[in-house]
Image (cartoon, rainbow, N blue to C red; front, side, top):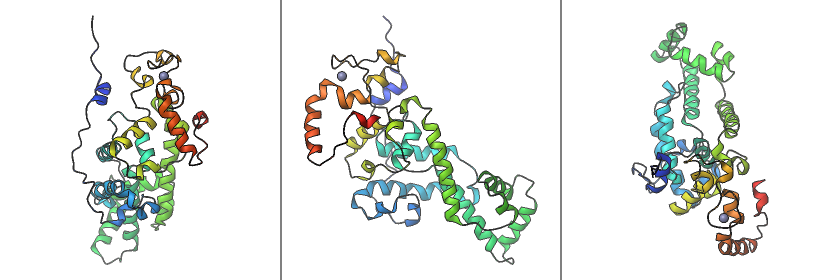
Length: 300
Ligand SMILES: [Zn+2]
């Protein structure tokens, strides 16, 4: 009988991650500017070294000189950031990008780049007219019907509903720009979340775009990885693995108990008999800490 080979996605469960240690998780951080998108509270925590360091080592490289070219979006740069997130979370390459972003609370690199481009614009506007750089800028802006820097900045301002800033050669408050860029991204992120079937559980439990607490705890990587896989809908439960062979969802029944339920995240956490002892011990433990919301309603 023909035996179906493993799909690329299926293999990724069994293959160990192939981290290239170009992200030194133990290195000390030194550049506070690249913490722009890291919640301030993290900076005080001694438990966040790995999380912060990954971003610190990465952002200055990905954003280098982006004041000049930050109006454009680079898929290659975004893919490097995604790869770093996957490595940090311990998840495979088929993990939905929306969940990588949501778990880490990292906005895409283009958000930082756009902000840097507008920061550079502000510098040029306030620069003395006798500076050579300013003269080049004025000349470039006069030619802005061409595909030059000024023309690209015009498009960027238009996309942010700030056309008048460009037309009037005004400076614009960076905090407001940052807020606008962030808000645009997060709105799109929420909309896109509804369209990824793999994120069936994620969109129920994830309401706000922010860094999840387990990310900033100093968890061993295997634990962080399992948590991320469960939340991102890629833990090899039958609801996921049944997809590889094209099984209808209602036939992806749990093989470990006789409840005849689809083995999805809800069944795995709350109902499967196989884990009853572990579950009960865990419930006793968390009830002793006055956590009362851990039940099936968590998913509703
Ligand atoms: Zn079961």
